Length: 370
Ligand code: F0G
Image (cartoon, rainbow, N blue to C red; front, side, top):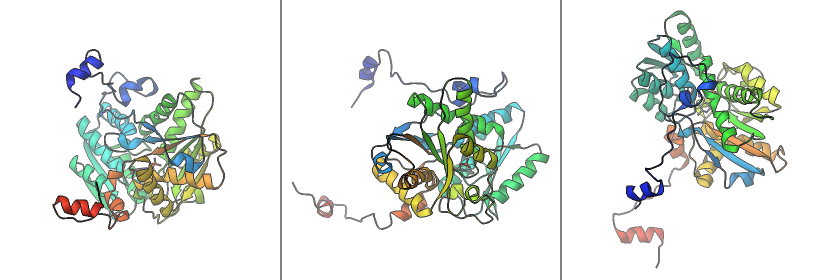
């Protein structure tokens, strides 16, 4: 066991932990803050960029990294933008915030609203959000309304209410959300000390791809980087309006987070694709779940299905010959696997083995010998 005294000696005067101040304080010069913006934080951001040990080979690229956004306080990338949106809502004197959500936005909004002392209302598509996310919104005391309809319909209701009542909209059409989320691209550049050739991410309402691209462009405009990555966006095959070029009325996919038929940031996503020379493509539910299992089994990273779409997409593009073999690729893993335990357990059915509470039985079932 490492005791405190030892660490104190090693660290020359304490545990020597790095104290990360959160998005608002750390990236203040890149954010629309004023002297009156409350610097709230749950210490979001500064998520790891994990080097792949196995899938890089499978994808046939020089190096592959995972930006694991599941390490944020509420378990998804939403916290980066939410902390800005909530701080600005507080600054503007709002008392209630509202969002439509496939789950993660609602969890994040609920948590940050409470941190800032605001009330939160979330509209979720009935029966279509993962249990982990619902448990978060409920535990943080949000008013949770299950809409008999899909995400796109819930968002339409939220947009209309927030335009005529004193309620702050905290979906990613709120520009403060995008401002906060763009900081993930700063961290990628910082961690790599450079710019990846490709950045892959799942696309639902298209706020995140818009935000990453904005972040990279800002670094370029400030002269901090001299090249830009190609953006690779992936939608589920049953919910791929950006690939079809038209809204999808009844989107369906196992990846409920990206079950969206009419993305609010449609233009932002298309600009990211076109300006970067990237692409937006589909991945099937089977490819998504296979990538989710590979990440868990081969890399030790547990993500929710939507997040695995970035990896599924990179593997698909590798099969199609997109990569030459020397590229640096970053896959954004947007949310933690614990968000959606149902789907995980369903994929592992029959794997739990029952055994008696005795050493002999355990040894026997494992086939151990000395
Ligand atoms: N991955 C996860 C885990 C998500 O929760 C979302 C979106 C996305 C990817 C797609 O990001 O919408 O910016 O293109 N979730 C939203 C929500 C819609 O309500 O939680 P996007």
